Image 1 (cartoon, helix red, strand yellow):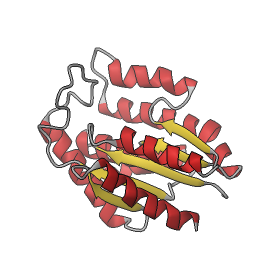
Image 2 (cartoon, rainbow, N blue to C red; image 1 turned 180 degrees about the horizontal axis):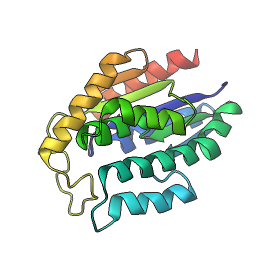
Image 3 (tube, rainbow, N blue to C red; image 1 turned 90 degrees about the vertical axis):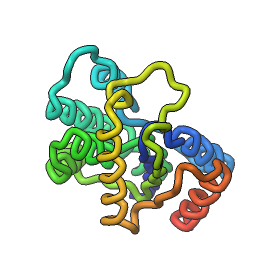
Length: 203
C-alpha cells in the first residue's frame, strides 16, 4: 500500500503519547496527511471495547481479554487504518498487535505465538512499516504521580517485567521493523531519533 504505518509501543508511562504527538506535528508540518489512531479505542466501536477491557470492575478471563483486543484491532484496521494507507496517508498509532503479544501473550501467559496469530488473522496480516519501542527500565517508577489506574496499569511488577522482556524479544526478532529507544533519554533526543528513522522510510 502507498501509505506508511507507524506504531508506538512500550510499557505504561514510557512516553508514547508525547512522542507520537511530536511526530504527528512534524509530519503535518510537512504537509502530509496523517491519521491518528490507538488501540484499544481508535474507532467508535473501539471506544466501547476500550471501556470494557480496561475499566470493567470485575474479572475478565485472559482469553476473553485477548479476544476483545483482537475484535477492536480487526475493526480499527478494516475501517480506519487500511483505508488510510490505501489512499497514501501516514497512520500513527498508539499500540498494535505487539501490545497483545506482550501483555496478553507474556503478561497473561497465554502464549506469544497464539496471540500473534489471532491478531494477524484479525487484521489480514497487516504489519507496521515501523514500530517505535520506548523501553522503560524502572518498573516501580513507571506510573509515578498517578492516582488512578486501569486494569493493566494496576497489574504487579512481575507482570510488567514479563511484558518488557516480551517487547525486547519481539524487537530482537524483527530488527528491520523495530526502533528501540531508551525511554529515560530526553524527549528531544528520542524525537530526533524517531524523525531520522521516519525520514529514511519516506525517502
